[in-house]
Length: 592
Ligand SMILES: Cc1cn([C@H]2C[C@H](O)[C@@H](COP(=O)(O)OP(=O)(O)OP(=O)(O)O)O2)c(=O)[nH]c1=O
Image 1 (tube, rainbow, N blue to C red):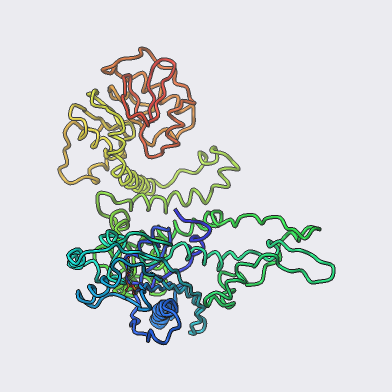
Image 2 (cartoon, rainbow, N blue to C red):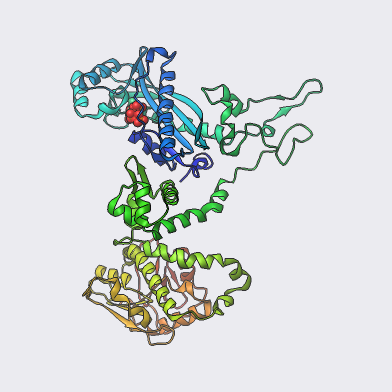
């Protein structure tokens, strides 16, 4: 979830966290921010005595960390990220600044100072907006700090040393980690807990609001007076921020907002009061832009970016470009988009797959959705491009399309089979175990394609014999989806057309991702055929042909749960209570 419109403001920007701190990374990712991590090489050796306050020191260190990353990235790529975030956390007690301990003795000195007392934890944060033009880098810095008070209990020497020996203090300011073992040392906290852990998320979000959604001037209530100029009755947050630590007016250009209020559609009413503005439509903007994210993912899959990085990553953009035979500049941009989408990670050594990408977007592997992505790219994308004419002309228009070249339809079928195989491999276990089917001994998966679901059903239910019934031109290719010599027990394939040929006998029929493809009269026809063929199950409830209403709830259920299967049997399907189950007038059970 993204806390739109706050964190959402950064979604379409290239954001870099200039920090090696795993805590900062976790806090910001959990808030829904998408960013790259480029640890800063700035040496934290500023002269503390030169700063009027401890937090001024923390802010300056945070700023220098972020500036170092921004200018390094600019020099390297001639292109800086849009936003760089730096932070620095310090602990202060009695005017002394404590950073990370140099060794165990140092940690002991720090913890002894904090023992039984209250101290302050400051985190300084710098948000740098970068703009590269004609090789020049312009940077606009916004900085702030947050203070949290932490009180330690009275701790024994033994406990302190035990804690130090755990190794936890070494990479943490003040020599403790409140979020882990160090939490045992702490009696109470006043202020933002996450600030102690390394990043004041709440204050950060407020800063984003100031930067990206400053209240418009006309939204601020005004009092009119005959003789004196209009006066703002409330301080405008963005104006107030200018006096705040360093959020200077130059930031006003960020994201196309000028510091001046844009002229609103409605002027003040006659009393000088103005209606509230409509909420900023960030979800809508995300919807408008959504296709770009899909297409970037499709393109990276098609170019086998995730395969290359799975085998050889991390790699620099130039090496990926060579391997996928594409331009360096184009590849670099595609890789950065994939980073922003959470599909790749970028570090000093180059780009690498996230676990999600290696598992689902590389072309090989039991959980690969590569075929499913390719199908969407090559087929669904085109179909959706024609959505307007489909809506205007209705489904008949699609039926009237010219026959395609048979070799193309073969390729298309294979693509479709790959897509379904990938998706079903991923979902088969959940579908197979959604209902307790252990009482059945025979099942038929209609349109069961490569048998991925049937295989899981046979594996799950040792008494069940499963028949996969699908078109001959589909069955012909099944072997290419399974290891050579694959001969699963209790599973066999029967070629046929479920609208024309006799259906194999079974107590249970499975229709997974089938019904949504057909018009209501065809669905009626198919379900009637199923009902006629269905053998009595172990808990027979009905006899004769069910009244197969076209608007059966099962069909609606399928549309709601597109990855689920429809199981139809003349028996009692006992299933978990949260599953949909509807019974028609004659007792046939419909479950989706
Ligand atoms: C007090 C305290 C600090 N810390 C951590 C937060 C910071 O990571 C670290 C303070 O060191 P910092 O110098 O602020 O950060 P860092 O060196 O970890 O990362 P970088 O300089 O690359 O940004 O101490 C905790 O994790 N828990 C705590 O309770």
